Structure formats: C-alpha cells, structure tokens
Image (cartoon, rainbow, N blue to C red):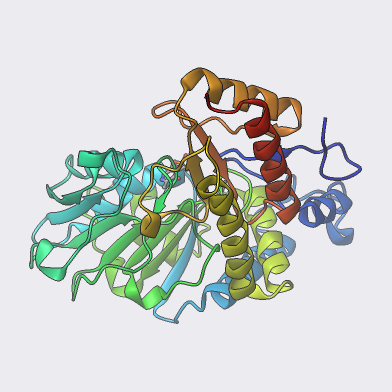
Length: 368
Ligand SMILES: *Cc1c(COP(=O)(O)O)cnc(C)c1O
C-alpha cells in the first residue's frame, strides 16, 4: 500500500470527513494527554476553564485574520452541522416578508430549500437540474424578488463538483452561502455576504463544529417561540458558550487556523489548491479514457468529478486505487463515477500519486 509518510497513512479523497495536515495531527498528539502543562487533555477540560477560553478566543481571532472578517460580523462556533443551518437560517432570517429565494445547484441546495419551505415562502430563483447540476446558472439581480428576506446559494457543490467563480449580485438582499466544502480554500470578500456557514469536516477540522459568520443586523430576529439553541442571538450573546461547545473540534480547528496562518494564509492556500486542481483537470482533459461532465468555467477546485463512461470500469478504478492507498475515490452514491476531493489537507503528493495511478490505469484499460 502506498503511504504518505512513515505513519502508514493513506491519501483520503473522501468528500468529508477528510484529511488534516499531519503537522496539526502531530501537534494535537503531542498535547493530547497533557495540554500545555494543564495536566489534562482538551477533551476532559472544563469549557469554562481559562485554558479553553483562550483556545476559543484564539480560534476566533485567527479565523478573523484569515478571512479578514470585518468587525460588524460575528463568528459563532455551533453544533448540528451545515444541516442544522438549513433550518436556523430560515428561522432567524425570514424576518420581514417571510420570502426567500434559493438557487438550486445540487442536492445540498435542494435540501436547504426544502427545509426553508417549512418556515416561509420559498422561491427557486434558478436551478441547474435541467443538466443534472453540471453547471452554475448565470444570475442577475432581477432573478430575485425585491422584497426577499435573503437569497441562499451553495457556494461549492460537493457532490457535483461545481463552484461559483463570482459572487452573485443580490443588491440589498442579504446573501447566505453554504461554504461547507470551500471555506478557507480561497479568498472571499465577507462583506458580499450576510451570512456564511460551514460544517468543519471538509476544509477546517474534525466533524462536530459548524462555523457561522453573520452580519450583526441579521442577529436577533428569531420568533419568540424559537427553540433556544436555534436562535443566533443566544449564541452571539454568550460567545458560543451558551451551552457546552464542541471543545475538542474547536481546538483542532484552531490548530488548523494557526497552520494556515503560518503557511502564507488563504492567498497561499488558494494558490496551492488552484495548482492541485489544474493538474488534475489537465490530466482528465488530455486523456482518452476520462472525462469531466462539468462545464469548464464552473469546475470546483475542491471536488473533481470524472468518469470513464463505463460503470464497471469506474468501479474497477475505485477498487484498484484503494489497493494503492488512494481511498474514497468513488463518486457520491447518487451519481456514481469518480470524485477526488482535494481539500486544503490533501498534500500535493497525494494529487501526484492519483495522477500516476490514473495514467497507469488508462494504459492498462485502453478504450477499444
Ligand atoms: C457536507 C455538506 C453538507 C452537510 O454537512 P453536515 O455538516 O453533515 O450537515 C451541507 N452542504 C454542503 C455544501 C456540504 O458539502
């Protein structure tokens, strides 16, 4: 089995949970049983302890530095994954007209819109279902209802492998973006958004913590019968400590933030990610066996989807890759084919190993 280093590690191309930088894992390992002389691990320590308060404070500060988050935005560390945000967003943001417009570009966007329908008047402003979500619809301001309380998009479509290259212009309507599979992978302008949310397990850290970046004026609009945990105001007022936060996940995410800051920040990360993705798409383009069904201009840097056109051969690819230590290359169960998720934590060497494997597989399985 091919491994990434002397720890017998595989290259994991899973859509999530996904790889973390080995140096971060080692740092966590070093402090695991005795965090910085506290005599206990972060898993065991009180979330009200000075040590943990510092972990949380540093994590927020470093995330703010990385994404240049303006002061009028709050950062919340919540639980429940992106899925709970599908509910919290409409509950908190349907505050005036009770109307919201969704752009449906894949299964996650569908799920978000469907959840919204429980709480208000939801319109599908645009969809790319007509071509099985292989592109991002072109959007203009007039596609959205003028009095909509917000517009919701899924910034990177993890399953289909598409991504916005330009943030849609919604005028004064707050734009809400699910960035679960792209946060920290490229530079973004926070002030183009009213709210950004992301589950951690793709680009940030272990599952269990969900990041919400929300503009101040969108907080405090939940109805009075809103369950307490679902009200952004409660979390904001209590600095993400209304109840016990996912301490260990926040701690590891914080280590990842430090790691990115120490390695050139988001700009350098984006450059690396772009190179990794371009390399892979170039091999697909230059091949007679593989093809990518996604419109060129909308291809994701994070989730690279490709097929051979023969389902049996796709299955053989995934199986043989796994034997070489390149795991989880199967496409989502809803679309099949292959998908290489190459998030921040995927080293260049992992992409190179995949490319080597793709080339040798193509040689052995020439199209007749
Ligand atoms: C993975 C994913 C989700 C679901 O995230 P959970 O944290 O499991 O709820 C939602 N949206 C996108 C874009 C995703 O990639």
